Length: 280
Image (cartoon, rainbow, N blue to C red):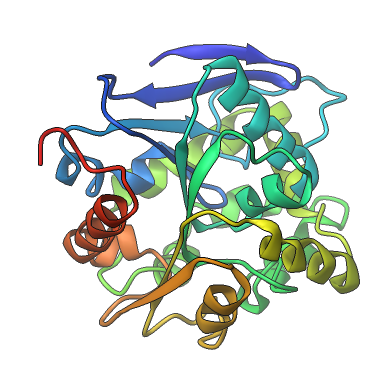
């Protein structure tokens, strides 16, 4: 897997290559590029770039002084787009909603389209069901205890509720292993997990999505326990060119539960906004 050295540290990324329109996929916490393993094969002709950002499942620790806050992660993503010289990018997010902050930070010049798939928004950072885990990260010894929970069936079952189909054990192993084996990666995980600012700041940042005057697609899950049902419509109304698609029989991880329907909605949106696949 290619790796690029950015200001915060090394970032691994998958890249399907090719000359088609560029799609950049981000992931949740603590997950990696495999979150999209069912979707990317359904997008022939597109150049799909999938960075593993330092949200806790990254394979190499960041610099000790790296800013891994919500804002810092968005700036790191913008830096990646610049360093890879990616333009007219369709930025696709799921679960973690922080990529939207490239807009509030004034760093969206390389983003031609925005796709928000069942993700954090408004002041839902972190979602209510995840807040006990974040609270655990704040207490002495809590992060190490959390890595022990990663191995338990009960925790894995609860974490698996992000998907109605369940998340395969080998995928969870891949997501949880880095922070379990490396104390510096665990440090990075904690820095990110405890970084959300107060509600007023989050609401202000999200409100600036009204400045994104390019095509935007909001895809929301009908059976999502993490992301409030009304947030999808609110986001679509906030974005000047926002369109809402709702997908039935799915929890937060739509790429896991309904990859075909998600790929269909995505390719239709791309074709309608001038980014059709040459393979189509």
